[in-house]
Amino acid sequence: MLIEISVANYRSFCDRVTLSLEAEPRISERDKSVDERNVAHTPQGDFLRIAGIYGANASGKSNLIRALGTFRRLVLDSARESQSGDPLPAEPFRLEHANAAEPCEIEVVYVEHDVQVRYGAAFTRERFTREWLFVRPSGAEEEERWFERTLDRYETGGAWRRDSGIEEKTRPETLHVSAAAAWRHEQAGALVQWFRALAVVNGLDDDGLLQRTVKLLEGDRHGAAIHRLVQNLDGGIDALRLFELDEDLNDWARRVRPAMSASIRLPVAKSKAIKTVRRGVEFDFADESAGTRRAIALAGPIVEILANGRTMVVDEFDARLHTLLAKQIVELFQDPAINRHDAQLVFASHDTNLLTRTLLRRDQLWFVEKSHRTQASDLYSLAEIRFDDGKGVRNDARYETDYLQGRYGAVPFFGNLKAILGEALAEPEA
Image 1 (cartoon, rainbow, N blue to C red):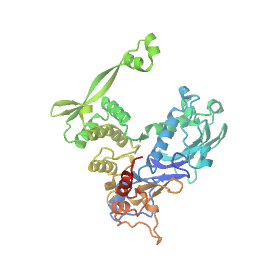
Image 2 (cartoon, rainbow, N blue to C red):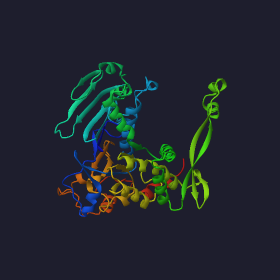
Image 3 (tube, helix red, strand yellow):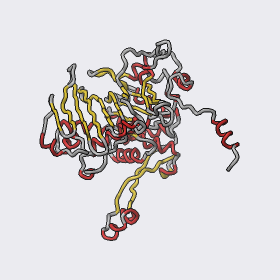
Image 4 (cartoon, rainbow, N blue to C red):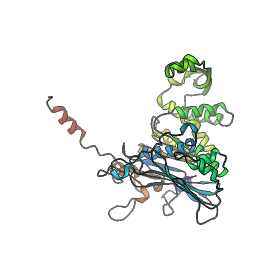
């Protein structure tokens, strides 16, 4: 299970912020079933199955999820020879001169097989400046340092199986765990596998999601569950049908690599695509509404994550989805009969219908707010808010109403748009 995501000096985040999925022990909702549906009890502690992130446009919600997606790609791909010499995706906070030259920093804490893992790295465009891996075995009170890397110097300990040969082979622009996993280091391979199973959905691009759904439909394991989910997400669809799609790679080569197409003949690639079936009639996927396409694209990954007890992090969660459908997806992760392995959903959204005490606890609701003075993003939970009288948010508060009225911050401030535009349009043209 995912426990924490921490980010510092990355895009709109200047100082270090942490999104925590550790259940706050002092929090108890008025409706006790809300606690029961949302808290997973494990030997390593109590963790939340769901977290929702809210904030104005351009507040930094997407940057938090983008940081996690960037870190995931670095773990999976930085050891590839094809990446050798490529600049790293460092995007430091640029509005403070001192930060622009400093490394970006991303850290993830998770639990796998009752073992808590804390892994992070700091990097510039040129290289990784630091990398660290700390582990707390099941039953232990303190974590062990497995390794710390500062530039090209390594300090190791605990149960980490050190290999100085792999250390020497680790390029400056490569994560050591990625290089070690490529050389079949078992402990590094387990960490890389956790990141591979982590699903990070950025923005509105559904192509990767749809491809995953197609692959899952091709197999025998999750096809039936995906069909049943889609039938209920959109009541008019009776079935999904896969068909072969011939893709002539020579057409691609002629467009993208003219010189290559003149000398090399490429094969015709076979791939699969989806058609929907309504009352026995087939429809092209492109004929479906944007909302239906989004729901089908999400269906495969949702089923896979729930079946395997993994974590799914989704930006723009409510995009193209009806609010009642978004709520039903959240409720899938709360149902112990469906979510038997404590899968998790972290989402960024503007859908305030999900911001309610009957659905989520106060420690599950997070807000991102950008400072008017520094333009840096801050992150805090509803459970952390304190009003002028020193009191926090009560468990009978109207979360949605109070948020929209600005009591929790993290709402947009537009000014009087009618007055501003009226004055602008009234100005005589030069």
